[in-house]
Image 1 (cartoon, rainbow, N blue to C red):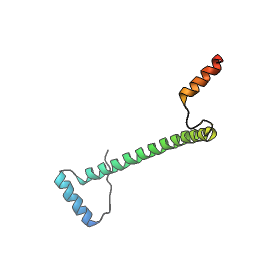
Image 2: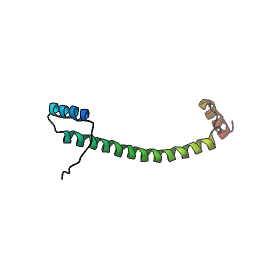
Image 3: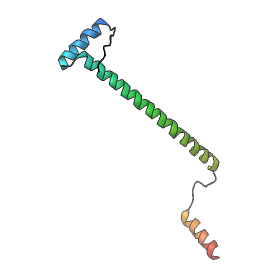
Length: 94
């Protein structure tokens, strides 16, 4: 179903858009409708992304809390070969 919509626009804009529409062989109404559709698509995507960011933000916050709790409890540099050797010596009593 189509509905009429009256717009008040600057005269020079109207002349230019009519020329553009004629060149493209489409109606001004089609151009306006496509532009409105695009605006609504972008808005919907923006809302969806915003909700997704909020979800990830709470996950990031809990990960930050975890890091704050345990940061510094693990040494920055570990010689894993030496750590393995120490573990095996203790385990086998040598």
